[in-house]
Amino acid sequence: MTALIVRKATSADTESILRIYNQGIEDRIATLETEAKDSSYMEAWFQDHQGRFSVVVAEREGEVLGWASLNPYSHRCAYRGVADLSIYIERRFRGQGIGSSLLESLEQIAKENEFHKIVLFTFPFNQGGQRLYLKMDYQQVGIFEKQGVMDGEFLDVMIMEKLL
Image (cartoon, rainbow, N blue to C red):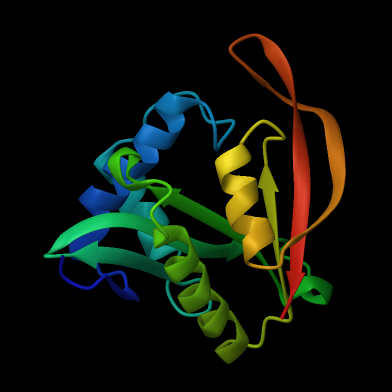
């Protein structure tokens, strides 16, 4: 098997990022979003993720297997050093260490861009995601009860963080 490559995403990756993100929406395990996104949405999203708010992809033999991004936590200047995290892995490749490689790369980019902390929001029932986050030294800091509604049901959201 050829080596996994983690690199900064380019605009040529947006279709793969979109496909993998839409899998996460369909699977109902990683986001409160319920409707698939389209290419124009992803192109605008990608343009907002340049500079400090970077996107990385993991690829093998030219196929994007997953992606992760640093997102604005707040637009208030007091939170300039805090980034929110998104990470999505192609269904067929979950649980194979790709998430760890993506997070390692993204954390390095965060440090280079003067972030001191990364926060993330996950569903308490997303056991695969939590295994990854705990392995990478993220700590649970709380639960937002009934934070959102998906498919007519209230869902709690777990907050995790890592100081860099």
